[in-house]
Image 1 (cartoon, helix red, strand yellow):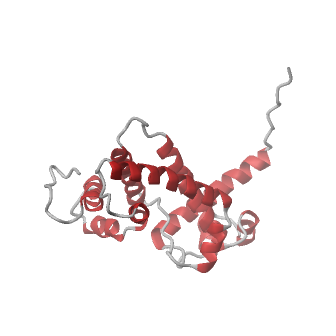
Image 2: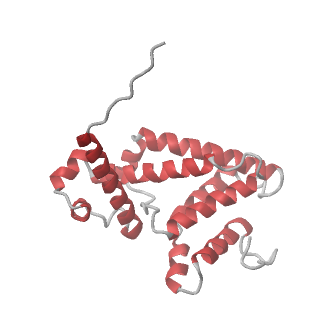
Image 3: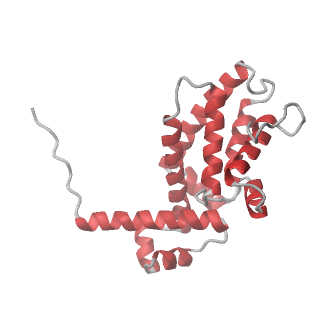
Length: 213
């Protein structure tokens, strides 16, 4: 019986991968801090500590840099979602996902991208890893949303797609930054407050007990 011999990775390849990972992490942080429009390739190269020409050996454009950062976060989200218990109630898994998104955002690790940008949008649409990840996450969340609507955990009169986009919007929710800058609440309290407004709304239908949804 023949067994496949593991491909040996050279030292140079390992170093290139480490550099690429460092570049993506730097881009991720800069996108979280200032957004796509304000970030520059020169700034990325300077913070990584390499020449701009070396940076372009890994990524051909600013759009490619942003897409790589989005793929990184997308994969983290896929890993988190796949680890959620299948036996849990759909609404609990949805809350867990939104909570994770808010925690990543509060930690400064969630890229902030414009909702409309032709060059960046084209780069993301043409990035297979990004689109495959987006479709997988959308399908998983969509199934939970429909199940939660079926058991009345979520409003069945709302279009499921509107609920899905509402959850996606939490990744760029400026309320999180405003509450964090105010310094009145801990990060965990901010997470619970945003979860409450997201899942329970603003009407006085049910009290918040100890900041919990």
